[in-house]
Image (cartoon, rainbow, N blue to C red; front, side, top):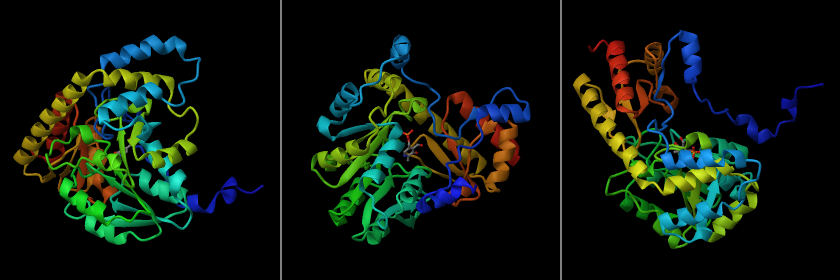
Length: 367
Ligand SMILES: Cc1ncc(COP(=O)(O)O)c(C=O)c1O
């Protein structure tokens, strides 16, 4: 009997499975250390709202029933928060699933998808899953090159993904740039504004993309509870999009895609904006601290609108990663993003940030 891979769909052979990096438990076991500060996955270590924790505790014994397949209460809460009609909201198992559903719903083999390099991993995965061509536009000055992205669009372009703020670089495209870009878009493609980190963005030039949803333009705004709301482990994200697009996504959605705990925790979180404010405040304080430390060490960094910062450590990022890991700190190496001497570090709690800086100083010999 041959290998089952011989039976595999041709188009998915190009998918490189997502690499999460080493877990903290693996690092601790491998190096025999007791504590790992994980600043590698843009998680929010301040943790979820106590209201979300309480909601999950109360629900624990009730998990024998299926969740609400339509996420009605959560949808209502999200629609109110975003000031869009409920019919425009789609909830998913993380915003990853919304990206996936956009692919399933709209992309035919031979279509193309446009996104920037370095990309968020789900964009090429979606293109490959659907057998689509990838039109990858290199970042320019660490930002999306929206003009070049618009130039790449043709009648076969189905989806354009723009991560704003941009993971992994932390930069944004502005309201003016977005307006010009949207004016150039044909009706034949959908622009997905992937705003996973929107709650952290405080630049007044950040665009109000929900406006385009309200206007019924061909777009989707994707957001998540994984970052500022600190529910990454529960997997709950959502999108707002004109109703005709939402209907297509609901057609490809698994019936019970968002589990009962995730729905309850997300609903409770929305009732606790103070926790969100605390997360943002912690992030802002951490950002200021890291900037000051990088400047003191003479390291270049990219000012961020997110919960992570790219910093040029002036040495091979993989080597730097290994040395940091030995000190119990994990980050992301820049070589996977085409920036081999840079690291992406998630902003953590004050003690996490301090531990990272201490380790980095030791690695770079900048005591
Ligand atoms: C740009 C971007 N989009 C989407 C996601 C997916 O988030 P989730 O599936 O956890 O909602 C992430 C997560 O890291 C991200 O960085």
